[in-house]
Structures are given as C-alpha cells and as structure tokens.
Amino acid sequence: MTDNTHMVHRLFDGDREIILVGTAHVSRESVRLVEEVVTAESPETICVELCDSRFQAMRQKDRWGNTDIIKVIREKKAFLLLSNLLLAAFQKRIARKMDVTPGAEMLRAVELAEELGAQLWLADRDIRATLSRAWHALSWWARVKLLYQLLMSMGAADEITAEEIERMKQQDVLEAVLTEVGRSMPGLKTILIDERDRYLAARIRQAPGAKVVAVVGAGHLPGIRAHWHEAVDLDALAALPPPGKMGAVLKWGIPASIVLLFLAGFFFGGKEAGTDMILLWSLCTGVLAGLGAIMALAHPATVLSSVVVAPFTTLHPMIAAGWVSGLVEALSRKPKVKDLESLPQDILSLRGFWRNKVTRILLVVAFTNLGASLGTLVAFPVIVKILLGGPA
Image 1 (cartoon, rainbow, N blue to C red):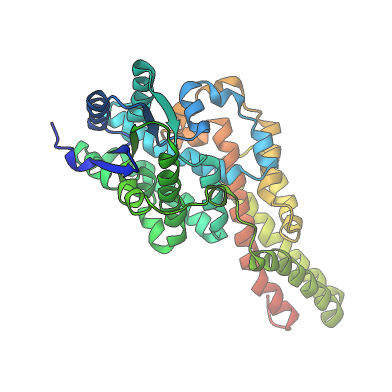
Image 2 (cartoon, helix red, strand yellow):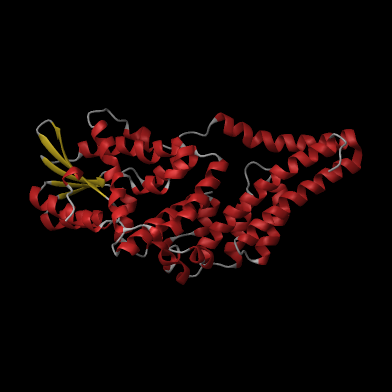
C-alpha cells in the first residue's frame, strides 16, 4: 500500500483539532486513506470539499433530466455549461480508466459520516460561483483557448496511468486539466485554486466539533495550511465581480465604430462604396458564422439562421449569433428524455458531444459565436480599405 502519511496534516484552532486528508478525486488509494483516517480518529464532524449543488448532484443521479437547455441559452450560460461538461468528461474518463467513481473518496466520506453519526460539513464554494468567476475573468480569446484545451484533454485522459493518477495528488484535478492554459492565464488559477484555498480554510475552521476530519483535494493542502489563521471574507469570495469598464467600452465601442465606418463610407465614398462595405461585412460574418454552425453539425435551418443573423448580431452588443442559432437548433432538434439520460455517458467521447442533442446545441452556440467573431476580424480591415479607396 502506498505511504500516504504526507497526505495527512493536523491543524489546531484553540483546543480543536482538525485533521486534513489530501486526496486525488479519482484514486482508489484515496478512498482507502479516507476510511483509515476516519476510522482511527472517530471525528465529531467530517468536512468534504463539496458545495451543496455538487452534494445534491451526487445524490440525484437523474439531475440531467431537469436541464432546460433553452433557459441555459437565454441566460447566456451555454459556454459555461459546455466548459463544465468538458471538465466533468475529463475526470470521468480518468475514473473509468481506473475503475472508480469520480469523487469516490468524497462519497465515502459522506457515507462514513452517516455510519458513524458524525456531522457532515460542506466546505467548498458553490461550483456555479467558481466557474462563473473564472469565466468572467477570461477574455473572449482566452475562452476559446480554454475550450480547445479541454477538448484536447479528452484524448489525453486515456493515456494516464495509475501511477500518474497518484502523482496528480500534488495538484487539484481542475488545476491538472488547466495547467497548459493556466500558464498564459494566471488569473484562472487564482480563482480555481487560490481563492478556494482561502474559502476552504475559513469554512473548515467554522466546522463544529472538537475533532474534525476534512477531506480535500491534495492540491489544496498547502494553501489551506498557509491561510489557516487568515481572516477571510466568504461573501466577497462567493460574489460575482462586476464587469470591467474596459469590457463595457469594447462591447459598445466596436459595434458603434463599425456603424460609423458604414456611414462614413456612404458619406465619403457614395452609395456604391457604402453598399459594398455592408455587403462584404454581411458576407464575412454570415459565411463564417454559418461555417461554425456546420462544424457543429447543426440543422440546415440553424445554419441558415446563423448566416442571416450574424451580420446584425455582430453590430448589437446585447445579442450574439450563437444564442440565436442555439435557440433555432433547440427548436429544430428538441432534445428528448433519452438525450438527457445519456448525457453522462455521451460526454465521455468527442463523438458523443456531437451525437447528443444537448451538447450539440452547446457546440452550435460556441462555434457560431466563434465564426461570427472571426468574421468581424476578417471584415473590419476590408471595409476600412474600401473607405480609404483601396481594393477590397
């Protein structure tokens, strides 16, 4: 059996003793370690690195049946849900390879609390707040890179060995997945790891009882110990930060600049120049948005809608082409109960992402938005050339 003594640490809060147990979220050895420590210590309280929503998800295996995909699109959470599913897919693929249940050590800790009559204490920040803060902190291009990295990670998951899984104890699973992306986006690690270290430390300190066992991802052990005596504002860490001023300026400024270019084209170049600018803008944004929808294997009506709406949505800061095409796809190929029921299995492969109607809708949103954005980048210098009197 692996020597796991370095994964167990004792902290004190006055006369209270807290035993931190570091685990890998897809490791059999971690399940055994949790059982050994809890049995030996007989704690009054068992803390787990779960929030209420993830705890309920563990208990409600049919939770996907309640997914309202149209509501997700309307609330502009399609990218967020897609990222969440990709992260879940990576973890599940590793777990399937190792023949364990994802989060099995957390589930075992919950079961031990019930068996021993110990109080269960959920210590982690709500996953929706964590992902929303992370997503909010990323630029548009960073989000594209993140999705690409997550897609590529699905293939890499099959190549990970049991020994590598044990070495992953030195990192949080999310951090392991996002290592490459995090090199160029340090703010992502701050939100996914560092903020949660502080949050977990504060929540574990709040746990009742003279003796507490806290089961957390091993990557959080150094951070929890470092922040153990630190005063933490939990409300601030759980809040979604307000949008940045620069983002708002770009959000409204870019479409306004393009409209002004069109007006300048008509004023300085005449009707022909202005018309050419609008036609080229429509062609670039519409065609590339349509190609994005085609890449997602969208319904023909969805492809057509993306081509039609992209020239307009790229000029409207409050509407995205992907949201429109996603809604059209949802109405054209409405997900059925079997799609929701098979979602946990389908996300384990790239083919499944395209086959399942729920994830295909999310891909339609993502790829159509990406195409429309690329169309904007291509069209902008072209219409400027026309305005300046050069060839298109």
